[in-house]
Amino acid sequence: MAIPDGAIEKYGRLWTPRNGAVVTPLRIEMDAFLLGLTQEEGGLGKATHYRNIVSTIWPTYAWHKWAELRAQAFCKVNIEEDTQTGNKFVRSVTGLAGGTDSGKSYDMAALALVNWFVDPLNTMVIVVSTSKIDAKQRIWAALVKMYREAHAVGVAAGRLIESMDIIKLSDEEGKAIDPNIGVSDASSIMLLAAGDEYKDDAQKRLQGKKNRRIVLIIDELQDCSSSVINEALWGFKGAQELHVVGAGNPSSIFDPHGKFCEPIKGWMSVDEETPNWKIKVAGIEGLALRFDSEKDNPNQQSFDKGKGLRYPFLPKPNDVAVARKELGELNPQYWRKFRGFWPPADADDCTVVSDILLARHGALDKPIWDGTPKDIAGIDPSYTEGGDRFVFTHMKWGKLISGKWAIALEKQYVLNRRAGSQEDFQYEMIQQIHDLSIKLGIPNQWMGVDASAGGIFWSIGERELLRGWHAVSFAGAASDLPVSAQYALRNEATGKPQVGKELFHNMSSELCFVSRYFLECEQLKGVTPDLAWEMTQRKYVRRTRKIIIESKTDMKKRIGKSPDLFDSFSVGLFVARKVFGAMAGSEAIEEKKRKNKESFKELKQRLTLRGNW
Image 1 (cartoon, rainbow, N blue to C red):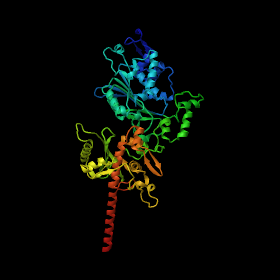
Image 2: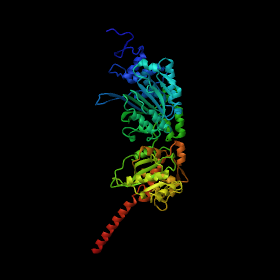
Image 3: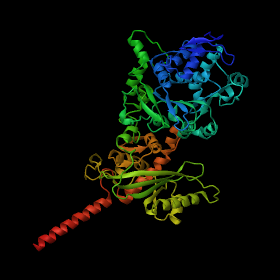
């Protein structure tokens, strides 16, 4: 059979010109990549075709070990089939955990460009970062540089519109590819800011976006808004092809990056020696890779072979050694920036709790109660509209089937003014708290509210619908309530459990830090990722042998977010301590009363029997 004009035979098939374009070796590699030609089908495998494309467009591209591993992970796909329609869907998810200068941005930029170049009309690439300013210093800067290089050699489709941070096809290019399909922003590579301060705009821009092929690349994932990421992941599930990459510096297993990279078998199944593990994101199975500059640095390998500094853009062995010595091998910054793994539980971070402590002591587990627990509530109000979040935390206190008494989070509610309400804001919130407490079956006497701002809000509730609830002030001195029954926390002179004022500099420190003692005694359950994240961000110091918690104002300046969920939870925990005698490592007041009553009854029976005898 005669080969048509312009056609080329390769990989066991005939490649013919289409849309007036000449068949070139690069075009064949692009089509083979797009088809995902395996070796069994006569191709080289998706990853090899991808490498061929990258090396052709950017001849100086550095294929070090980490770049090779990332390319292989990017090209690992799952095929899902709809049993009703028979339609097949291509899915790929990759998580990247690495420190600074590990080359993640360039590899993700190459992935974005290649996926768009192979089929620009039917492909939408969304590059996400915390802000456009940050992105233009990292991934978007790399992407634009590589796009211009590809454009200079006549490979790049579309045009860069810098003012809009988008690369898109022109109408003429679209018609040349397929005159029946109109060109829109869906046929583009676009930059999206998804930090918390930009989340509303990001969600609006994501609405209605769709195409046959979608590539979602998220940089600095640890600092992106979880709501934006979730909306993007689940909103694009209908695409015929969906490729997702989430990258960041390990910070917390409860932030968006940590949740994205969570091992299928749980965090206790991996450690700092684990190079990769299976993950599941939005129902799609994938792979997480980590890049350890101390143990597996391509530059170190080059040094060991006597080749000197081969990759100047990757971490330098001397820099790693200096950081390890000056920061210390347990310093969280060293772990995040060089080890590429989440800091261990004993890292010197001075936070109230660590990710690993929460996981190790079962704080994320749901409680299994022995009997009916008590419902309590902690409230952290916002005294003005538009201020911090107004949080109502529903908690339970009771006995677990293990025999331990525990405090468990049931649910946290963020309250806002109801639509159409003309009521004064504080009275409106009082009414909402009352309605919610009635619905949940929580009596006023088992609720607490932060009354730091002069107790104004508490006093309104006390005069109105919430008589009998407890004013809990973060301001002022620590309390006289015992903290923990653990031996190490007993008064040396009396042998009795130390009280709040003996351990903490102020009441704010006591309210927040006591949760750690309950955690260490495995008496803390039901903690959600959002609450866990705030708990692991709150710092403390020791001064004159007492603990001082970082102020709410300072924490908000440092991380850009107020710890309202944690404060609300801390108020509820204080109510459990005050009303029910909850104490870490000890039985509750009610249990002690029951045991004392039973012991007295048993003693009385023995004395009666002895007297009768």
